[in-house]
Image (cartoon, rainbow, N blue to C red):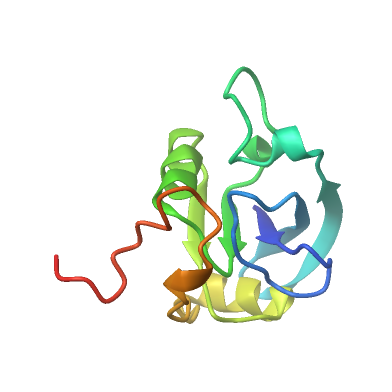
Length: 130
């Protein structure tokens, strides 16, 4: 299975998945180490936040996207494309993939809503009553 990890620096798992343009792509399966097979360095208009849904997207080829944070828009758009999107506090891409495959990936850490870049905030409902 192909798993993409949001990584603006190509070293660590990074957040703001909708605006991320760099992804490490791994071929991964239980009981074997993940192998990096590609690096995506997309133009701004191909970030999911900017992408206008008219045609194929490079993330369509993966089964899972792992990121440090993602808003509901990113999660919904990935789901509509048949891609599982998951957030984590794990910062090492290989460890994140291994833990995902083992069913033990740490959830994303709470984040500061004063630093939201997306219009209207992240809409994650962190700390808000349902």
